[in-house]
Amino acid sequence: MSEFLQQLLNGLSLGAIYALIALGYTMVYGVLRFINFAHGDVFMLGAFAGYFLAPKVAQVFPPGSIAGALVVLVTVMAICAGIGASIEYLAYRPLRRRPKLTVLITAIGVSLFIEFTCQHRLVFGASPRTFPELLANKTLHLGGLTLNTNQLVVIALTALLLGGLSFVVQRTKVGTAMRAVAFNEQAAALMGVNINRIITFTFALGSALAGAGGILFAMTYTKIEPLMGVQTGLKAFVAAVVGGIGNLPGAALGGLVLGVVETLAGGVQGLSNYRDGIAFAALILILLFRPAGLLGRAQIEKV
Amino acid sequence: MSLLEVRDLHVNYGAINVLHGISLRVAPKEVVTLIGGNGAGKTTTLRTLSGLVRARSGTVVFDGKPIDSLPPHEIVRLGLGHVPEGRMVFANLTVHENLQMGAYLQRDRAAIARELEYVFTLFPRLKERHRQIAGTLSGGEQQMLAIGRALMGQPRFLMLDEPSLGIAPLLVKTIFAKISEINRERGITVLLVEQNANLALEVAHRGYVLETGRITLEDASPALRANPQVRSAYLGG
Image (cartoon, helix red, strand yellow):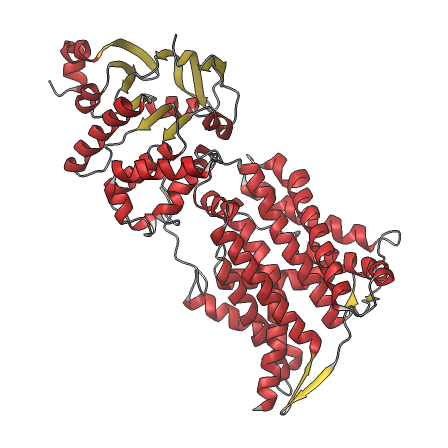
């Protein structure tokens, strides 16, 4: 039982990271109806931004302090917001009136471009680096459970960011405009909404969350490298689809489900090598029974 | 002096020409209707005026300012509201949020509250349902919401595209009465596109007849209603 709870907790903290990334996929899909395949690379860039920033911040704030970690986190989120908005402006906006397939292929191109540029020895190089310890990671024993404080930080911070996102989307003017654009871009334009500005905002918001995910991932797994966004990004994308693409709570739920299933499968003796296979099989099953995803509603094709 | 002046507007969708050089003008506080059959180009005309569709050539001047190359959100800012065909309410938002979206460009909270109050007196049904998700409203209620939403932007000029489409006859009467009321009480200039020419000519001061992308007739509403050609083509004999 305590083994199960232990794995559940591990799964939740991994799933929280998937959830943060999945939200970016789903938000962009909501307003533009395409998958930004470069999103996983923004997650990677977030981890690297944190890697280079942490030593600088440590000169001002005591190493391992909460204030220092927060400064790193917020700065990285801002940097990633800028990167995401720039990718949209440079790569996707010129193709706005082109077929979606064109944009999709461009997204794959942007993703490969970022990955392999970063692998160059003059940029980050291909070999993994060890992420500095942002927060002192303590191990706690609680009943039969072993928790480390990092896992709790990941879960708590994700909850906080999800709450913040929900507030922005549900309660603010720009969030209402995002939902309006997602539903009907032309009608939103007739209200005086500058569609481009909302799209920029959406990319910035999603990318900031991916940046936070990058920091949390790096804190937990400590190894970062330029291709780290490939598999994690793919999984987060799958999480967004499982939750119901375009649906924000769905993306968060999908991320958590994927993290938990993957970790539980990995915890079973003899199955740990198949953890990804089992996780994806479970997701295929979910989609067989709920093709629109866990929280997605079946779309009626507009005619 | 016209509030809106359209000169020689040509619009095409790809290889298909939809508007072959239409010209029209609307004076301040006027209600003008554009009548015509299916596919005549009525909706395209409105969509071009509000910037959703780009004209190939021709000019649109609103209040002395050319607007034919402006994006939709800047045209709205000048005071040109558009209630689009099919209503296009934000079905995923509440009635209240839809109305807030209508006031997207307004910064003055007091003015927004005043406008909301006006819309609620105009359409009390919207007040009753202001917390409801707009997608759950009936067609007629959605039309009220679409008009209310456009009014929240405090337009000087309001374009309405087929407000009678798919709505119970009783509600159609109410909605047309409200359109008159908006014009009279608020002094908002109206450009009304309708297939139901009878109704449109009752409300409008003047009308244009649009046939396959060309204006073929232009007159005061009583004259159009008396015109034998209009009677046989659009008024059911």
